[in-house]
Image (cartoon, rainbow, N blue to C red; front, side, top):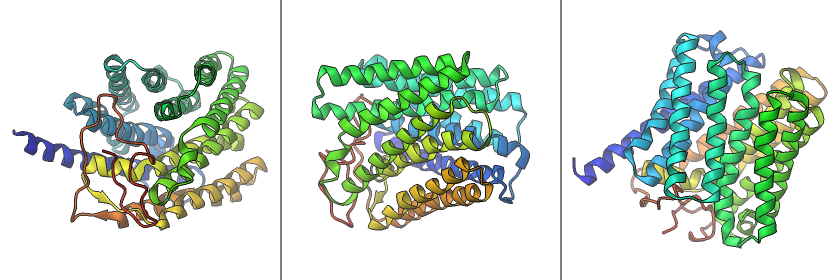
Length: 396
């Protein structure tokens, strides 16, 4: 197979993986709505509602992030992580026995961790170390799951993994501002504190959870102060949109940290819901919104036009999440359910923005990224400043 044919195969595999990952995300979101009391017809409903979190973490994010890294680096063996993530998600959807599903999850997260381990070995940098620690946090969660732990036992490791993977990526980009030693030490201390707190939470839940919340707060303040996203507010088009989404997410990370610091270790109920979704929806999906217009063309080879309509997604997400958290804090199930439905609507709005922006007549330029494993995820800066209705182009 020549290089051009191999590239075509990789592109179609990437598109298929994204489609299946999106399906996993959709089922995970529907399962979440079903858990809140909405009457959602689902296959294997009882099992899928329990798999709400794993479907999103493994089926969607392991697939999406693993695929981005595989395409960026250009090594075929790195496609093992997204493929394994999809297989694990499909097993859950098909109603596979618990042991099989947990074993496949372990394999997927092992492949995912090895992906970041490979990147760390090839390019020994601080930001790769942080992202590897995030992937390792997810792998720890899969080991706990296979050992019989329940989902609430895994949640701290999932959330820590998200924070470390995302902040590691942002640390790489923050180098453009040339942070001094004091700033770098603040970041490193916060990361180490977060890892220690998450580990402690497995043994001393009350203390560990509050320390984890403090670490979230520290990292949120660091990102709000030192991340390059603030520069993007002075730009236009997709670059300003990315900056707004990033900063919006950092605020939600601070909220999640505050809730965890105040309430401590929760395993169920309204406060548990508030702690998880302030971070998993407010922080994580804001990052997805911020990077989608740059990563999607690079991975799929499809050109993606940015439209101002995309701002509706973070607006709906933020408003509905406030409603949901209000319901959680006053123990009002109706408000919480309404907020949850609004959260799902925000994701639908963003999918519409993506779908309407895809042009099949021209392909996005998608060069191989350097071995750092980063797919031109700088949402502003080196790319053209873009118009209010412009195409998201990759930096050269």
